[in-house]
Length: 104
Image 1: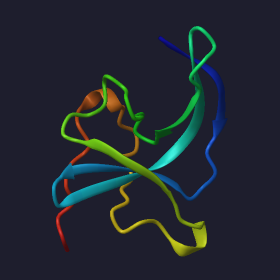
Image 2 (image 1 turned 45 degrees about the vertical axis):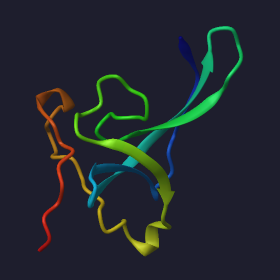
Image 3 (image 1 turned 90 degrees about the vertical axis):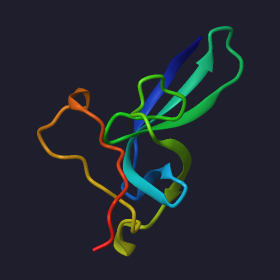
């Protein structure tokens, strides 16, 4: 079992990309970075938690999405084209949010 060693806020511009279907991805802003360590003190890794509370390897991530990678875009260059914002005022437990975006 892993334990959290340190948590730091993520700087603007970091995103977690999730694969929803073979042709569709969705990015959410990373809210924080956590340094994890095995209980015996070995095997450290850093994971980012996105703004809807998901991180790679979490057992309760929304179904239908697989973590792809983290990416960084300078804030002045804008968000990735597949970026999404979670609905405001709604808690994660209220239902799935990883859904393909439809083209305009």
